[in-house]
Length: 223
Image (cartoon, rainbow, N blue to C red; front, side, top):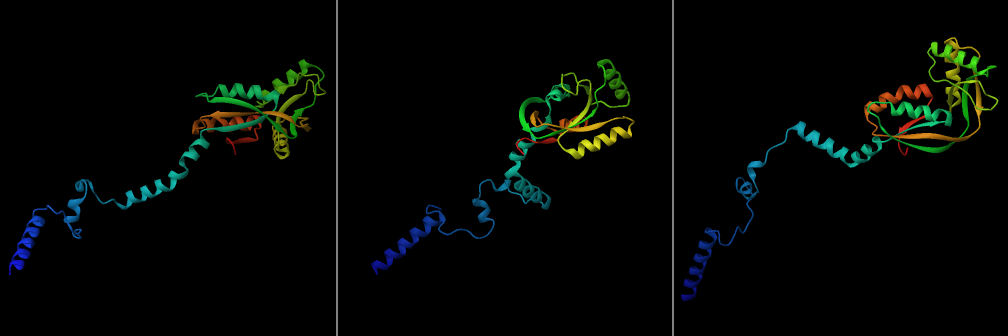
């Protein structure tokens, strides 16, 4: 009898302690609002809309390679230009607004195709023909001054791709430029520019320069 009374007393003490919360919650609450009450700042929880969920998913898919794409787009290579053209291209690049950060590197290249007017008898005659070509809208030209067999010839563009050179020749002939020829130049070293930052404004300004100077490379750095 005494044992039974002690057990009942002990059970009452345990029940009282549980009701006062001294023993903690022995079993997890499986229903609301008990579960919400246990969360940290439950008032900050809200249900996302379908549009918000879609944007989060798209951001997650793009996040993995976003930095890589940003780094690649931050730099662009523009080239490749023979020595007699590279200096003029750099002047044009420095005149862009806003001016990009420019670094130049020499790269080995294969054969070049030069579009040109054959050598004239004198430098004065070559300059006169060059002025006439400028009047016809030909901008990328240069009177060759070195002591090579092409002295006093007029360079109208240099191309790494033969098809582009022939296309440029045909375009000049349609514009009334007579006697235009294409020749193969030996392989050598060319100048390739790296420009930063390669944003949309820069790319838009490079497009006409690529056409004007016959650039064969306009791509993210390292590709």
